[in-house]
Length: 261
Length: 261
Image 1 (cartoon, one colour):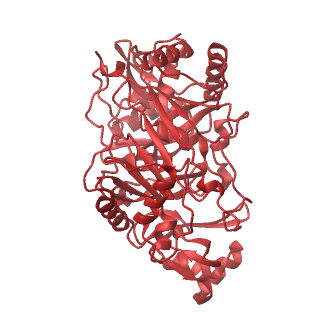
Image 2: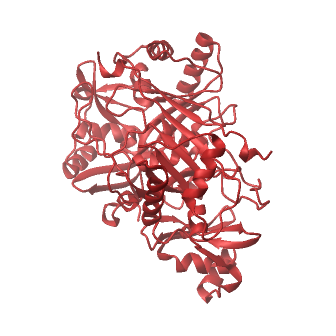
Image 3: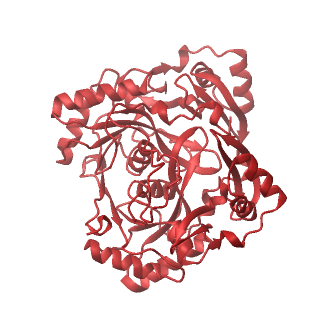
């Protein structure tokens, strides 16, 4: 019997809403356990746990009180031009290694930056959010791979299962409208699967480059996570991924191979 | 009871492998019906049917015998520089409105083009593939929205259900390694969901731009479709999408709003 004619294995996306807001110092493994309990759902080995970076940042205290930020002349100049808060602009610059593009598009100022981690994104991933009753800036986690590895270890300890963890962020894209989610932190899986050199059912060599599996999983989870409902977690079950040590930095194209820097 | 605490609705990705290769003139609704039957799976209203563009192109005869292509001097010059087949380069140029970037990266020549449809992609989406025993170039469907609408109508007629249809393509991305799938044809759904102006659980306005729902669904389906096994279809069940007339062209950012053209 040919493989294609067996019952094909599907994938399930299981959203895990939380009751409470995440606050600095919270234990995300405990929060996920509580959410799973409410859903009468469980975690099994080889699941991928996707978590929106915002609650990771909040739990890790990656928050800045805007009143405490003193914007530079550079930040103030751009803020005036772009019609945005100069204190937020200052944080965006502080969180960046370089600015790739700077433009007012449809009345809205956008800075495309390279973060200290090496990610290219809008506004260095700095978000302004209501946290514990006050408005604060939420930064990306300091080291999202490390955050993912910690959550993975805590889940292994708590549930006795070996899962992969992806920390996701919503991201805009050149040429295309609308946001999709990408992986900014990874643990327990290789983020890319390389099909080069493998052969299709005709024996023809597949010359495509690797598949960005971790981004595909993050993007899929984005269908249920982080929209209006408070659903920062999604369990993705049934994905064929390569277990092992991986880093989201493998998903970042080297500058010299990039046609758009 | 707060919405977040009800049992959250999940999403299923159901791969539908096919036994046979798709050939020009094939009826994709019939092929999908056969595949579903083998899987003991069915189609229900509000499912999203994702199909890889390659079998749509094959069924529609969007194929070119390479021997029939006479490359121009321009195509031959680039082919020499990039170490690729000049006849394929000629097709890439024929299928394009403009060339955005042209570079040899890691020993491999890449042309980033704007297709006649308006999509920005590598090599105008032209692929070289083993078709019916011979090597042929596979072009993108002439009008992927129309192809999606036709498949949708045929499925409605055959199964009596109202589904959405997405035609997907694997695509590289600036700044990030690895391919992910995007929607190049859409029927029966709005490809973008606009959350602007809506409020999060704190009453704080969500200022993110729209979510690219059709791309998220295509990307999720990419986890099961079009890899080594012959699985060109995926049923995505449980997605919250806005039904209605939509076009994949809504996902293409207008040139004047794009920071990377």
